Amino acid sequence: MQKPFEIHKAPPMPGHAQPAPLRAEQRFTRTDNAGHIRGVEASPQGLLRSTVKAGGIAAVLLVVFYLPSEYGTDLTGLGGVLGLTEMGEIKQQLYAEDAADAAALANTMVIPAELTGRLDRMDRQIAAIAAVVGADALAAPAAAPRSGTCRSGPCTCGNCSTGC
Image (spheres, rainbow, N blue to C red):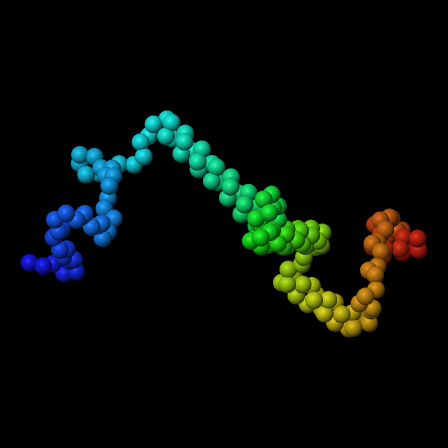
């Protein structure tokens, strides 16, 4: 019985070469007796060879793509052709601006909005009290009372020179 999507081939004619298969056949089978697929042989030479190849590929990717695109350093000239060097230079400018902004913010004190609101309410209350008392709200506070002794005992008036 014919299976769905099965391709029937005509039998080869005598004296003619066998036609090429329609799909690639697996030529090398890396399976063990239990049918498990085997990987690369783990010999010291094979591991060293694979490590060196991987390191070489990583170095090429670093020099050709990463350095131009991140730092604007183009050792091969290929980054300029691909536009990666310009991108890296723009990133470096942005990093420098960000560092300058962070340094500027570190030198300035940032007051949270909640604290600013409290300070504003306190200023309004002081102004209202000063209006009732008749004093200037922005005037400097009076000097702290001097300690001394009046005729009647410890100074309570703040002006011991008058002698209370």
